[in-house]
Length: 282
Ligand code: HH2
Image (tube, rainbow, N blue to C red; front, top):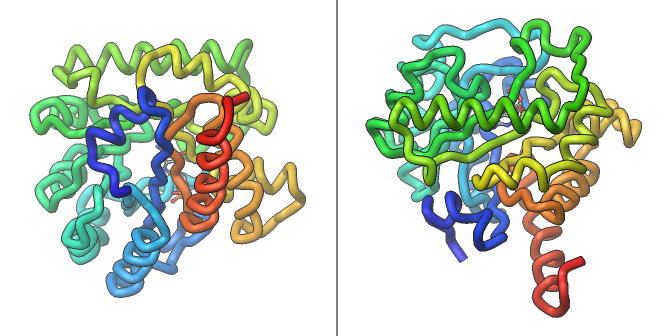
């Protein structure tokens, strides 16, 4: 079944999982940097992810991997110009992964209907008013510090409570800018200023985030903590671990999963959902 934007925004009420396929139009992303900078390669990858079951394609033109440098709004738009309209023309729901309002405005003009802001509106407050005036979906993500230094020595007293409080405050900031609550998605920001123990505590504690009343998105795909747990040093070798992390998150109430390997998670979810339909959920 093909989902629409309202299905995505109501997924926490229906417990229907949705897969957000990752398309990085960047030379330096940690897992697929340089592979989809060529517009034709990017289009092929988007088509492949849609065929494999992606409900949303999340397109980004700036890597936010630990230690990364900023990319200007103009450069992001140049990278997106040929790719983004081609993906919206495929009929996909497109989300734009940016913290800059000029880039988001360009993407919405080209047909994107979700803004995925890893700074949750702190980098460029204009993104909140843009989301409000255009009535689009808005992902608010937790990050401790900035990509450049976020993995240096992240510390929390109670990571789940701190991330919950941060997201609650960013929801309030978005509402104050005129965004409707029904348009907001929240994300604990796996790997963004977090050590292994923090990522695990957040995945185990998703129910606490769900109590904020908005759908929870999890981006665990191929991230370093999967490598730390499985011994897979190459991001492309972390597919099974990424699927396992997403399923664990789904069982705890998350419904949106940002994935490089869409087909792998789609198969796992088909099995999980079939089992759930045939008996009580644990
Ligand atoms: N993770 C990345 C980028 N954007 N957005 C949300 N909402 N949640 C995430 O966990 C998230 C995100 C980092 O992963 P990736 O895009 O694969 O790498 P890079 O930042 O190096 O392009």
